[in-house]
Amino acid sequence: MSDPGARTLRLLSLLQARRYWSGADLAGRLGVSVRTLRRDVDRLRELGYPVDASRGVDGGYTLAPGAALPPLVLDDDEAVALAVGLQAAAAGPVAGMAETSVRVLAKLVQVMPVRLRRRVEALRAVTVPAGVAPPPGSADAVDPAVLTAVALACRDTERIAFGYAPPDRERTERTVEPHRLVALGRRWYLVGWDLDRGDWRVFRLDRLDAPRGTGAVFGPRRFPARDAAVYVRERIGGAWGRLVAEAVVSAPARQVRARIGPWATVTDDGPGRCRVRIEADDVDWAVAALGLTGAAFTVVSPPEVRDHLRVVADRYAAAAR
Image (tube, rainbow, N blue to C red; front, top):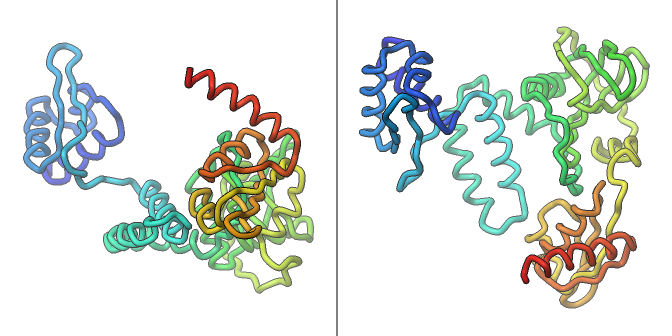
């Protein structure tokens, strides 16, 4: 890489991608000598990036924390993820976050390439948030390329083909008219008309691979529910949201809603109190979410939440001692 400006940006991207780099590894990645690498590092320092260097056989470079946040170098998937996250924060209930998120989003979109804006807009336009509590464990990861490919097909009403592997069953090829993406907890679902089955189906995106457009555009079909989120929650039933916790919280609904976020249903229940309903697949999450309310509460149901609260209370008391 002969252009110093392009090489400096590449060096910055590498330093942001990993905590520590040896000098030899960095020089090899950039295709330059170790001496040229030192000059590039000095150039970054002149631009305000604090790069720490260690000498010796195992010497290398680390991008250290600075007095101010320097510009970041993001790859395509990181930029899309950041934009989608900022859009969610701008619409969220956390006090003071919406205005800041909008400002940052405006800066990001202004410099974002057209191809990435198209991906962000497709995700925003066809995603329906289901608004229920995410389970505390990490769900199987979804490839960002799969997510955006399906989102674009939904937006453009283009039939797609993909491989699908339900649990304990062989992978099959499916051809689908995609309708909507639904974000339910930490999982993504595709709702679409399965041409092979002749019916509406729900597909988990982490079980879907190699989505590809067929070039065939389809017309709208009558959807069998008032919205896609309701349809997904009804179809997966007990496979998700096995626990429904309910509690009365001694604080106004607006205050609790701002603290607990969109992961629970909060309704007024008299002066200075509200009722909170949490759907989750783990009692740990229900207890943690109730703790986030920042107020006294009484568990209405189920009994296992009360039992788990006693266990957690003993654990916290022991930690305090």
